[in-house]
Amino acid sequence: MTTLHSVEMTINGKTYRVNIEARTTLADFIRHSCGLTGTHVGCEHGVCGACTLQVDGRAVRSCTMYAVQADGASVTTVEGLAREDGELHPVQQAFSDCNGLQCGFCTPGMQMTIASYLEENPNPSEADIRELISGNICRCTGYQGIVRAALLAAEKMREAR
Image 1 (cartoon, rainbow, N blue to C red):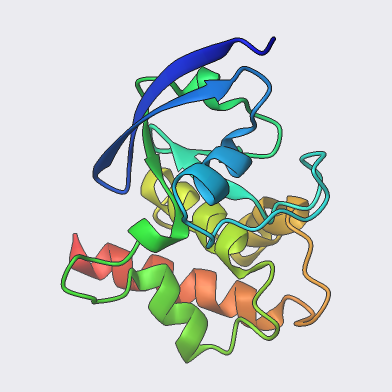
Image 2: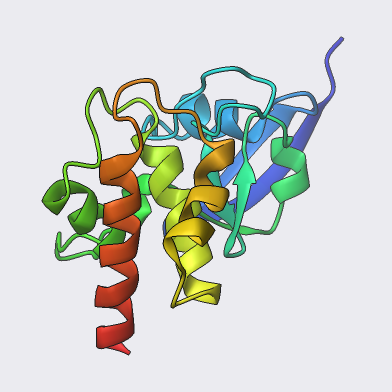
């Protein structure tokens, strides 16, 4: 007999209350219980970064975190970065402007990692960005557009403050 645990969290401003198994990862909860498929699952070991999202403003690998650990938390997925009126977050817009995506598989995790970082570090160097994204694997872009996008987003976010 499987024991279910009641979990409640706010995801992209909407409250979800679900009974789940303790072993359900946050990534699986978000994708399967909430229907938000922007969070991708690649390695399922926290190595590739595709599943990165924000829990209480901090970037986390959702494939290595259980949903019960996020009980009561505020979670932001890539779907929640854009404003309600549809205007893209500066990181999302910069990815488009700088051709920072190709196949798109790594893109949500990259954007969530960068957006979280820029909130705390508004003036990063190129070396800072390269170090930051070294934990997010991209097989298509060669990272050049991603680095340019992160630096452009930082600039736009500084201007908006």
